Image (cartoon, rainbow, N blue to C red; front, side, top):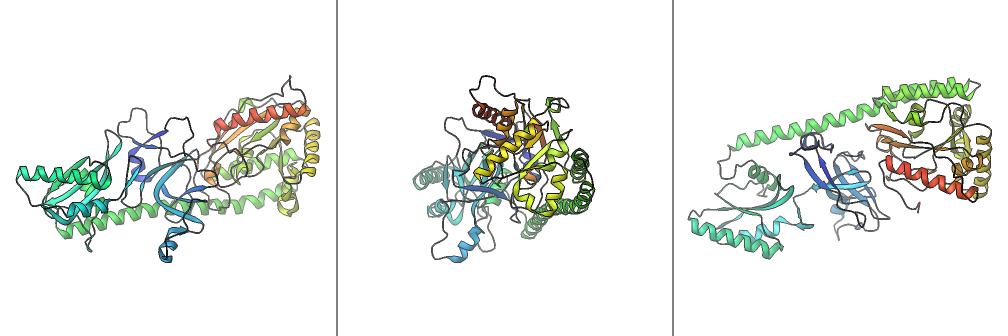
Length: 497
C-alpha cells in the first residue's frame, strides 16, 4: 500500500510504446497522449508480489505482465472446485487476475485480465447490471453490454451501458435512457457515465452467445456504434488476422528473450573457464583483477548489456585506501562492479564460497577476503581481520547487506565494513547498482535484458566527533545507506525478518 502521508504517485507513460511493446516508459513532458496509472504502493509485510509473462517467467521493471502474489492474505482456492483452484495457482503464486508493472518496488495495476470494471476504487461486475437492464421493457434481452472506457481527457475510466432497442420515438428513448441510468445506480451504487441506445445486432457476441465486452468497447471508442457491421466472413478474417498478429508479436518478444538468454549462457560457458584458467596461473592479485575486469567488460558488452558508470571522479586517488560499499541485488553484482571500477579492490565474500574448489581458487587469486555471515563469534574475528587488511593498505569492496532475494529493496546493512573503516580512519565510498535485479533475480537462471547503471558517490570520512569506534561505524553505515537508497531505485527494507 502507499506509505502514509505521501501524495498519490502517478506514473505517466508513453501510450504508443506501452500498447505495442508493454513497456511502461515515462512519457515526454507535455505529452498530451500519455497514459497515467496510479501506484498501489509496495507489498504489505509478509507478502511478495511479482509480474510474469505468458510463460510464467518474471519480468523486469516497467514491463507489463500478469500480477501474482503470495502471503497470508492469499486465498486457499475455490470451495470444492479443485480444477479452478489449480488454474488459480502457479506453484506457490496466486494469480490476481490483474495486469500490472512495477517501478522501484511499487506496483502499478493497468487493468483486469477479465472484464471487471474498476471505478472509484470499486469492482463493478458487468454481468449483474446487464441482466437487470435486459429485463426492462423496450430493451432486447441478452443484448446489453456494460464496459469501462478510458476517457483520454480526464484519464479516468467511464462506465458505459450499451443496450439494443427497437424504439425509435425520441420520448420513449429518453425515458428508456433514464430508466437504465436509475437501474445502474440501484444495482451498482454507481451512476453510469453514458447510456447508449443502439439498433438490433449492435452488441457483439461470441458463437455461444456470450457478450464480447472488449469488442463492444472498441467499436464504441471508434465511433462505430449504430453502423452496420461488416459481413461475418470479414469479421472472422479480421479477428483471425488480429489474433495472428498478436501471437506473432508475442512470439517475437519471447524469441528475443530466449535468444538473449542462450547468448548469455554460451558466453558464460566460453569466457568463465578461460578467465579462471588465466587468473589461476597469475601470482599477483592486481594482475588477476585486471584479467577479471577485462573479462567482465567483454562479457557484458557481448551480452548487449553495457554498464553505464557515473561518478568515477568521486573515487579516492590511486594509493588512498578506502572501503567501497554497494547494494546487493543479483548474482551479477560482482561482475558489474568489476567492469565499472577502474582500480583493484579486494572483494569481501561469504565464507561458503571458500569451501568450493572452483570459486575458491579464482577468488583467492583476486585477493578476496572470506567472512562468516551467521556465526557471531567468527564474525567478530572476521571484522578484526578486515580492519587489519585496511590498516595494511588494502582497499575493500563489500556488499554490506550480506545477501539478496528476489524481492526488491535495500536490506539493512551489517556493521563489519564500517567498523573496519572507522578503526583504520579511512573513508567509505557508497556505490549504487541499478538494474541488476531485473537482469538476473535470485533463484532464477533466465537472464533478461536490463539496463545496468552504477552510481559512485562521494567518499564519506569517519566522524571526528564520534565518542568511540562503534558510534563512528554506525554513522558511516547510516550515511552510506542513505546515499545508496537515493540512487539504487528500490525501497528500503526495514528488517530482515
